[in-house]
Image (cartoon, rainbow, N blue to C red; front, side, top):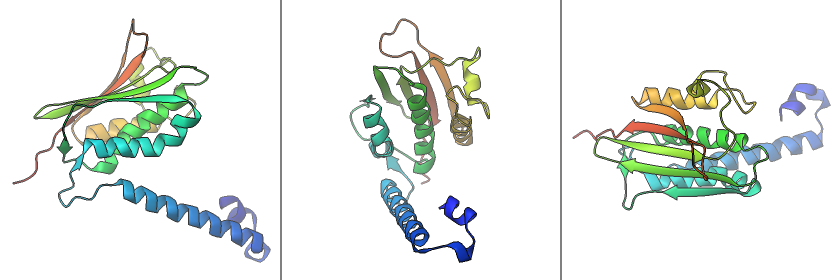
Length: 197
């Protein structure tokens, strides 16, 4: 769309250009409609963690398939609802998943695992991967603005940390030694915000 609009004057637009613009607008509308269906509706702005994982899988389904990534979930039995904005928590997780997908490079046995632990005050999400190790001496500098080990913008993990800070949580990355399946995990700790009585 941008190339058509920025390289042609209004007089230079033809039917082929217009058809392409209409097609792209249709795709954008469909994408927005599909994404809005991922967000669970709740008058109290609460959601279940399984809904969140379904959204993560849907957003990354093609990348998992094309890149032959095994996606593993270790979620405790039962329903775990919490009162944080769905889109913010989804963005946090998705930024980490996208980063892991980029970091796989030419790896053969690609795995991402999400494990979750809940208690009465907070929950911990661990996102494991066996992608390339983080090449920085201080691995938590991966969350600094503009820092990237995958050739990206360095904004995604910075944004994940920003969201964690915003909701009074923490995020860190931990290297794992002597593990055949994974070499690191991202740990997100967020409070379970109690509903107002």
